[in-house]
Length: 395
Image (tube, rainbow, N blue to C red; front, top):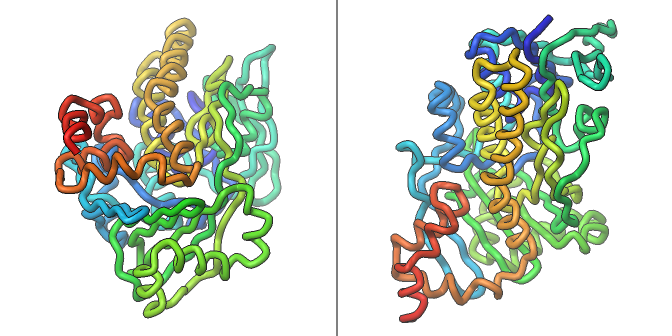
């Protein structure tokens, strides 16, 4: 019998398995894919995510894997341009946007090094119950055999369409409509930092990634998804041309080296986080529009928070229940402002905040603080302080 079974070995599952194994628990980590395997992603690691990788001893491996360092950010909309970068978190200011077929195996290797048992190519098909308590899982191996394993706690880190959430009937606690759809690809010969461009109804994001390639993403209103998907490349290029003409010129000198990727399923929700014998992390418990690229960083934070709250109390029924309640409360405390912030950006209406942003020009410290509110290095409450209000009143 395992102490913990984690379903899903990507950005939430592998860190959770690693952290539980480091606490001395016997951990089974199951993943239906066979690594390395890509997945849809906004790629970007904000400073808190980089800081956790450093804390976990995995940052050097990510650097050696060739993800280009990022140390500059820009945002441009309606004639206003800001340049700067987020403040550091635990000494980490440089960020990265790694390919997922690079990042996810690094995280899984971290779990194995900590003592977790990792099995890939395994599809979980059901949960095992005793009364109303989840006590294990049933899964099929790559060879087709059906296996049942038991555990004190089953962690669902299995994404937006979580089987664990479905099987336990985890209800939506917060649910909002889809806001955007996105398409992206990878380009060679297009130098970039972390760059954002916006006009009404369009959002462009790009960042350097592995193999000297640049990720270039376009966002459209969800209402346009049916039309955009009929001519993806044409709509993608037109969005860049009309939103960021200078970037379009750079792209004209470069080359798209992979197919177009995208989705219209940008769900926005919080699910019930836990129940008897189970808990959800990452996209399984909380998903928001990818336009602010918070998914990977938030998954890291949730894994760390869950492991910290449980600590050595996994086998103490009352203490475990208290720990899971605290974890659920922290989801709201730590992530709701970013959730609402992402939805605000996903409205694709820059005119609502351009005047405030215009007044930041010439105040570099405030610009860096503004970028820091998106990264999580600075709270929204701290940003809207007397210094900012003075600048806004004087401008």
